[in-house]
Amino acid sequence: MTFAEKLYQIRRESGMSQEQLAAALGVSRQSVSKWEAGASMPELSKILQLSELFMVTTDYLLKESEDRKNFDSVSEENYGSRQQDEIIRRLDRIEKRERERTGEYEYISEKRLWGMPLVHIHFKWTKGYRNNMIYGFGMQAPGIYMDFSTKAKGIIAIGNHAIGLLSIGFLATGLFSVGLFSIGLFSVGVICLGLLALGVLSMGAMAAGVVAIGYVALGVTAIGTYGTGVVAMAAKAATGVVAVARTAIGSSDVDGTYTALVSDFSDKKDMLAFLMEHQSGMPKWIGCLLTMFTKM
Image (cartoon, rainbow, N blue to C red; front, side, top):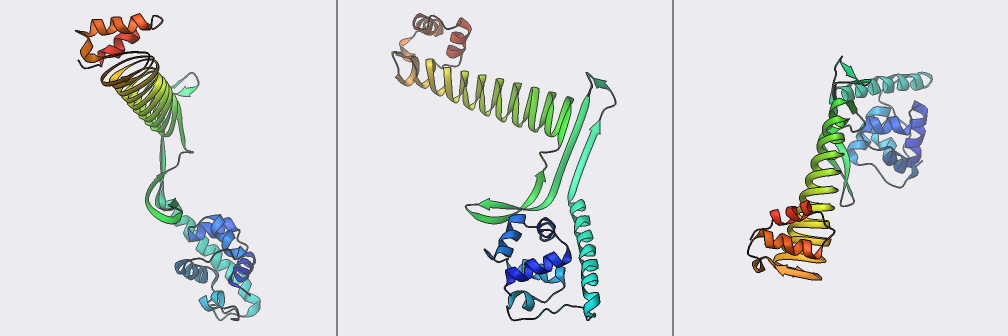
């Protein structure tokens, strides 16, 4: 029998599923499936764990001609039940260690508004190792991992995944949202989406950030219908160091139908008049915004 056949047999005899074995070894179910299909071999440390878990020798697992030898000198008729009892005990210890590696904090205020708690705080995390694919190789990456299926829902929500009128979290969704990833009417974050968005990468009707994409965009790189920034690219009007648009004003380089350099204007009023002359449909407040951040 091959290693794959032996692994399949002893797993089935023990009554374990592929998911349970994967959890016991700290690998994915797909890894166990590949081992049993003969598509791959586990590393040495996993073979030692299999040997201990199923109480068989490594020689039995690795050598096709080797007969089964268990660690305990028990009679053949008692071997199966002893093996299952030992596996259950080992799984219980594994589950206990998993619980110790997992932390959770939750607070729900008694006061409610519109059927929702006024404040809901909910965090859940796991300490340990996780398999990550890096450049096509499976890597065991240590750290603290957040559980984004854990949600905090309330008027004020704080957590891994926060949903509320005011939401603060790694993933935040709400009227006012602040987070690593934020979505809301008014959103602030590293990556954010909203009517008004402020972040490293921001997208919205009015967006500001290192990279800003929106109807009105303000950023180091600004892309939109109207834009201003170091590099501004817009459909209608743009101002910046480098500006590309139908109507463009730039400090060093411009491209478009109607273009001018900042040095061509005596003040910002002249600059605004130029923009309004060639973009008559543009709201004046947008024109003021485009000239406000342009250095003369």
